[in-house]
Image 1 (cartoon, rainbow, N blue to C red):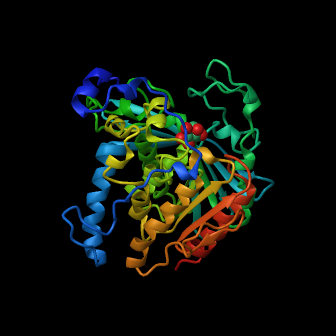
Image 2: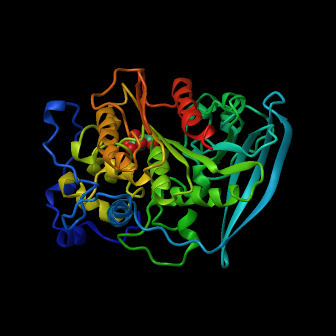
Length: 424
Ligand code: GCU
């Protein structure tokens, strides 16, 4: 990312032992080797005062939020630009006649700079404004269902033999390839809309020195605390929300933000940053998402910053294999979403994402929910596989690997029915 700070300068300025830069970050999968750790308490101010009321929490929340901005995701700029929508395609009889489909180009205009993102929108045929799931897709909008009318993304996309992507361009071969991860028919059947955007429209997922995508909308020279790609993607979800708020067909008080993996990290940061999102779902989000960093189990902070230097702000490098110095941990990210419902899902074979660390975040975020007289997560022992638990925080560990499956969606829809659909 933003190759602003050369490693030598970082060593001098940040006091990181030089050997870390040559060291291989080896993943630990042994519970007995998880270091002892003390988590920062969401309900204790930096000066030691305890948070006893919702009002005090609002102030403490600000303290925690600022640390996540400064040290983990980076600060995103204010948006004062314009969003200009134009319809690219539509169908009144999508998904076997059950849904309305639209593709909208949303041009984000900031002075003389602009960026286009394309939203694919499916809505159930309904007299009333509908609740809706909003999330990025990995494969382009054309991968979300097999409907032939959907445009193939022309944005940069990672090469992938399975979906026929070479030279970083998507082709017809990818159509519908992600359909089982989206379950569009099921969502429509249960009365929900779906809005999805190819995440590469908002920021291409490679280390580009902080130039293209959303970063290119601003003239500012980035520094070590500026937004990385996850913050950029989260910011893009807020712009999508700005647009959804203008639609009469969507209930803006019932927009659920969802994401898988790096986009699960993104969904959590979007939910923390933008309180308009009514509910948040993180699927297998792992390190930098729902998993506690201090456990250093599976992917560590050092590993993620080495493999994906553009995802977080440069300050996050200070905590490479040095998690105990982090001023926050990821249970506090969930706490920032309180009292809104949040669902965290793990997969048993996805040890890289540290399922136990994801569960423990739910447990340690719960005291903040209880301050709001909400249940948080109703258990303290990790449930068995395929045995979902939920209060205002929901959690399950599914059998199988890193993916979004129909089982995951069943839980999300049930949780949304309970917390969103039937909300007055
Ligand atoms: C890698 C990365 C994870 C990330 C995942 C994904 O495995 O290490 O942190 O969640 O990619 O986004 O698919």
